[in-house]
Length: 261
Image (cartoon, rainbow, N blue to C red):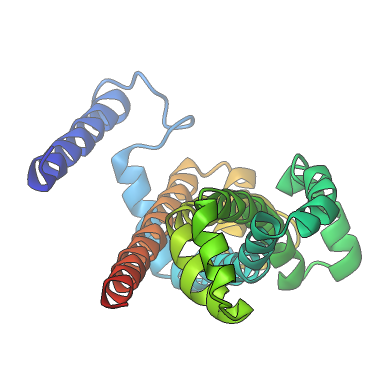
């Protein structure tokens, strides 16, 4: 489907949902405002959050705090997960040593790390970053390792026969060939970071979208709950789009470099 037509269909879908929301809540009253807010209630909550604030901070402070946690946890997962995936995919000995440990960690839900994170690091931001790190770590390792495994063995053997230095081999052969799968893992890691953020901020947070959602739930304030959810959706989509732009530029640069070589 052409991009312009796809955009039009997407906008039409959002328009239909907005009309249905208005009809079900404000016009017919089939959905009680106590269960789901009306558009007017949501707008009032948004104005309050952006103006005098909610949860002892304006909306901008909550958003910046959550963005900081997501970015730091995501970057930490990249710094550890991508090299580990490259190593496990390339070196059979490393895979034999590390894979059993990774397979033990892999099925543990990210939220299960919250008690240990609090015990080790307290209630500050570091504990929340740790939880987000574990959520984003697994997809980056799995997809990077899978990307390396898809490289044809003759390519690797040819590089070895030519005496390619190890770091040059990693930089010019291993990473470019595995890049599509690496970026797939990064997209999944970023998504996991946002889905874990709210739970990570439920405990001991003084600011952040998760803190705002938790407080709105305690106050029985559906409009503010929806404002927080919409903010998570918007900034999750924006960061995903930014990662997509980085992916396109990186893959294009690698293809141009490969063609020039």
